[in-house]
Image 1: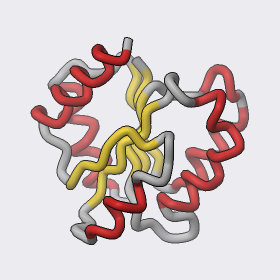
Image 2 (image 1 turned 180 degrees about the vertical axis):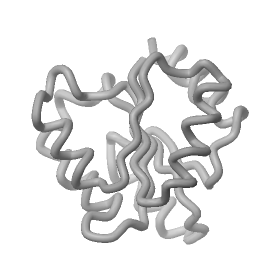
Image 3 (image 1 turned 90 degrees about the vertical axis):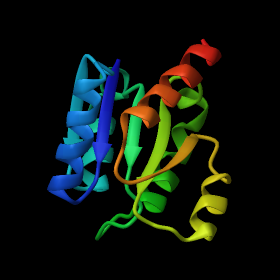
Length: 130
């Protein structure tokens, strides 16, 4: 399984990677410090670069998580069922949780930091959908 972590904070990406490695969650984990870099990477070779899972921070400079999701909207039909986006944020704003439900690509909303329990829940959800 291929996983991307998109967060402008080095420490958050590092912690997410460590939890995923400890859980043996992915065969490939790649971190991006900007949503724009991740989007450009995906667009370079769409077929090869679309991950199974994206952990997406909301609050980032330049292109935030919402902008990233909006930029993926034209690809939604091709991504549904193949790429699962989990918002991973420190935001406690209930409007963010509600807004995330407007995006079909968003599979879940997780408060930082990612835990082994979160990963187990995601794995169970993916297995149920398979």
